[in-house]
Image 1: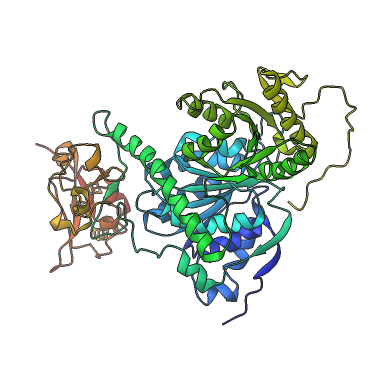
Image 2: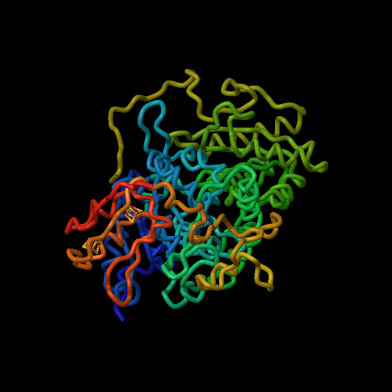
Length: 432
Length: 114
Ligand code: SF4
Ligand code: SF4
């Protein structure tokens, strides 16, 4: 057996994606590059030819001419029963959108890693912003927000156990901040092949619901008339989302039992919530940084806790309510803007909705914060300030004012003209 | 999934054992997604649409089976004994794709005169 070139050490987030896909024993990878995803498919194109992998697995690496075709390729290969993987971001994901709806409509189980990137609206932007993945919020895909390099690897490895579960059959899109995680390196541990194969769901020659076989031809997902079950099949996608909640939990529990590391219960990750009086709720890398903010604030006497939303679709209603009922002062920090929505944030709107439906959470204070758009840094001080705002609210009974509060939402990091903004000529693009 | 075989799971069996008509009664009975079975003539006798009838000249035919591959309706079959192609005129729509793709130009599109 050839010795693997890499087993553990510092690894870029995108390379962690690539190794995870190989270790999950994928059959088909369709690929088209886009910043900041490019190094995922570049690395995969290397790995599929490396001796370590060629001696035990065959991966069909298909170069496509666009993201739309990448999606179509995944759909086609998935129909035939293949385990499929790709990665994309920003505009690429938008271009793939139609095919993403096909994946969920046909109930196919690919895993697609997303290196979130600002949607090109006011000028081009390629930096971390979850607006791209959240634009597919209602498409039926499962969405996870990933916060660390090791978690990227672990989440993709767990991915197929969730997507290929017979109660689920929906694609999973684990999303992590472009450049923040994709192009930085941190220690990552790969799981040795044999152990990984014991954990990853055994392959089946075909799915129970669709297959490609000339002897048993089927026509899948043809026209459905309004009176003929279109409604029911749409509801079935929702049912699959609901079914995924226990599946995600079980998968995470099994992973933790086997490999000794985990991320909360797979849905939410609490930090110092036991005695907390106020709660910072967020997702992705910012939510991990919130744990530092909690530690710093505690030094100053503020008893804060942090809760990281790891799985956004399906929405972990029960788990969130569990913490919100205990800690009814909640700042929801988001790195994406849902234009025209009640709060400007998709997640805070959802959280307000679940609180409304639970009598014990109805009086919780949900304070929306939005910041870090298009890759702008969210600083530790800003997060500590969020904690202080919650304390002001707790003591005075109403949400305090700030210059950067508009329409009842705090726009963290808003350029208000009070501080001199340094304009830099030097642009940093990393190794795109 | 429940233990008992659901109605839709019968579809997985070979073509002959499939149920003739799928009877979905409710939401709880449905498969994951809509799957339909290509049953012969499910859209009626499409041969009635034909204006031109493809006629194969077996003298010139070289049994390349291009027509068989190209026919969008799957109405061309190969006779196991003779090896020549046969067209099922009950369902051939007369589109002429076979005639266009025949390398020997031995399929004639004759006007139906009925
Ligand atoms: S005319 Fe069209 S439908 Fe008829 S046999 Fe030729 S290809 Fe098939
Ligand atoms: S394409 Fe023409 S030559 Fe080939 S099998 Fe058909 S009729 Fe014969």
